[in-house]
Length: 208
Image 1 (cartoon, rainbow, N blue to C red):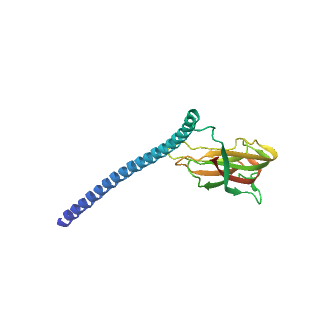
Image 2: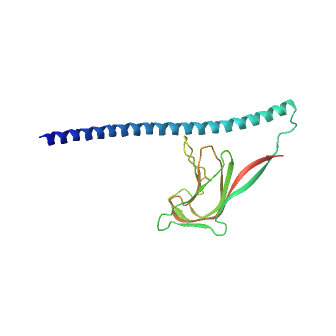
Image 3: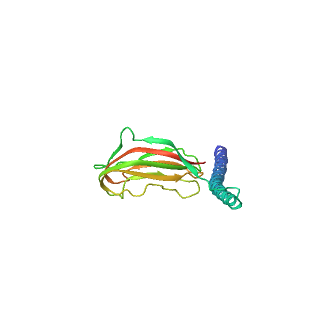
């Protein structure tokens, strides 16, 4: 009898310790979820403020130029010279080819590290044969931004069907807190797609 009583007592202690441990784990997990949510909100707020500062700085620059023109400090408006620095290249020696006639072909996706606040331009040439089931070739980007809606810059619809080489391009200013993935391909359609001379440029203005 004493052995049974001792066993039950020990079992009770173990069960109580396990229950306390479970409660502690639940409390810790709840706290961690709250901290992760707070961190995510703080990061989104930081990104929002950085983009707001960039917009404000540009407004101040334009206002300063206008004030200088009005008070005579500046005689003529600035005439910036556009400089394009190449930062990416693909499909130059040979076209990038997608064949989705018999099966679905995936787009070619490439993550690129772009500088926040900088303007970029991407260009290429596209040719298609019997492309159907889509509005046109995908020549654009997937650009998620922390705390904001994902952006989908692209060249617009190229049209489907069959056509010879045509030039496509799009521009995008990289926000703070954003990522950028260049995406090129048949966009889920069926047919053949060729893309060549794909180039990306950082676009800056040099005041002369």
